[in-house]
Image (cartoon, rainbow, N blue to C red):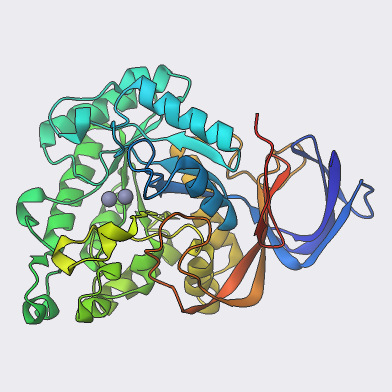
Length: 430
Ligand SMILES: [Zn+2]
Ligand SMILES: [Zn+2]
């Protein structure tokens, strides 16, 4: 269709208005607008399309777990219009050729904007800096760099990387895990890990790296982003750094906002994740920090793994869980159903803020005339039982079988429906 009208409660004040979408942009907002089709969305919430700053699409190299196509289809079902693809592929995205390949696969799939993240170090080995400048100058215009899956543990390498990306307003996204404190670690370090006989992963392994890196960010004046905060102590360090005016931003995953180490009790590898699920007191601290602005965004850390990597003994299983299709429902649970926050904050943490941190074009914008139509519409009253897998190739879904409130009904990417009535659409890509 060439144009259509959404009759919807327009964010942020939720007064019902018509939104006319023509040629990929919002061309008019008003009353009684005419279009080829008028779609009644008055029972839905119209929000800016979601942006995930932390997605593992697994291609190239691990296509048995996910591909750019299946991962971005999963993203569209979750209401996302952009994802940032982590660099721990095979080959590693540590040079211009690989980031351009991932970007092109994303364009071809046509479901969301795929922004490749570049590795900080060659081969994620933590020693030699990757081609940060060339990746930034490439067609992929990489602005976010991360060795995620591994920590940039060498302080000098981290300092140099921060200094380097500062020249083009880039950001280093740190997976904060001191390797010497987590060798062989399997789950949160606690009374429970002792009972289960699993090697513990202490909070200080995360907090010590964050403390070091916020000081390096202050020293260099560069932008630092901390991936997947998991402990109350990490929140305290970020709070201190922000009060001091340090240029740091932080993310939390849906699973660290909902799930605790207790789930590991029967050695189910579904709940094995890096960083590990922590205690209820950590969950509460993370929720509070998300609401008060200490934590800037929710990022999924969508980490699909083929069945053979998960359906095995706990100590042998891979770390990670999927999250794209359930992130919005978890956000609604934490921010809205709790009665503690609002839809404005939900749009900030799932759309505006991740796009701002990554300097994405045409994402995370206000719903206004002239903006590219990257939108999501949610039925906040609908309740659904979560299936293990729909679009994703992997079924390591920690919410499977649970009832969650909140359902993405339509996702609109560049003015086209990628999801309509909660069904994935075939898209015509360039
Ligand atoms: Zn990570
Ligand atoms: Zn990750």
